[in-house]
Figure 1 (spheres, rainbow, N blue to C red):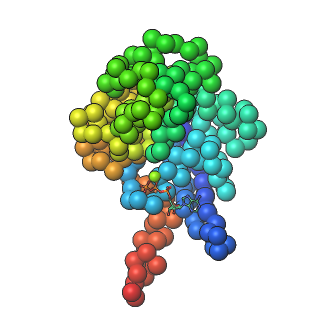
Figure 2: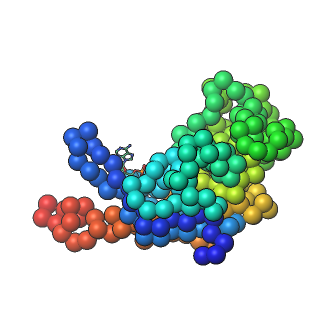
Figure 3: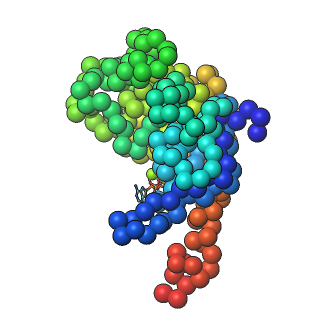
Length: 239
Ligand SMILES: Nc1ncnc2c1ncn2[C@@H]1O[C@H](COP(=O)(O)OP(=O)(O)OP(=O)(O)O)[C@@H](O)[C@H]1O
Ligand SMILES: [Mg+2]
């Protein structure tokens, strides 16, 4: 894919249990997302979706393989340079929103700009928060926001630095149905206008079906294909 902004090749990731057992989580021959492409990533709980996003973001180092983000091989960079690339080119919406507790809603958005190369732009921060229905909550700190409101701040923050790629881990999971579509609209519309690639992990079919590309992690993570083979542990062949 010539214009890919996310390129994974032969990526493997395993975790070690406290007992020392090695548990393979990811074995991905190839996964690519083009510039400006919008992808819904589905898959059952524990199938490695969050791990995959962490590997793409350079938060977790793969055990093997290469991860190229907007032309940059993150694993080859020293940590400071990796943080810089992430701050400039990536917007992240974590499953646990990771807002800064000492800062208000708008400050959380402005801080994301401050860490990147874009200049803090208060009117953009306000507009992003307003578009998810938080114009009246700009000065609230996370503890004074509902969980769904915190999640909406996290979505606005991810867009703050005009990234090339947004990775969003169940960005509507804590948002009530009335605001769910606002979050999806903000992500999809802003990414479309600004040619940002968007990968959204979701368990919500109403969200997933709004994406032209829907992929199940089981379709490209060979660890899960191994587990699904008849007679394997996961099938409980003789249980
Ligand atoms: N730090 C870790 N140490 C050991 N095992 C881990 C670690 N992080 C994740 N795992 C295991 O990796 C597997 C995949 O986890 P992951 O969080 O990627 O799943 P997920 O697809 O995001 O699930 P969910 O839909 O519930 O969020 C799980 O079985 C989990 O127990
Ligand atoms: Mg997860």
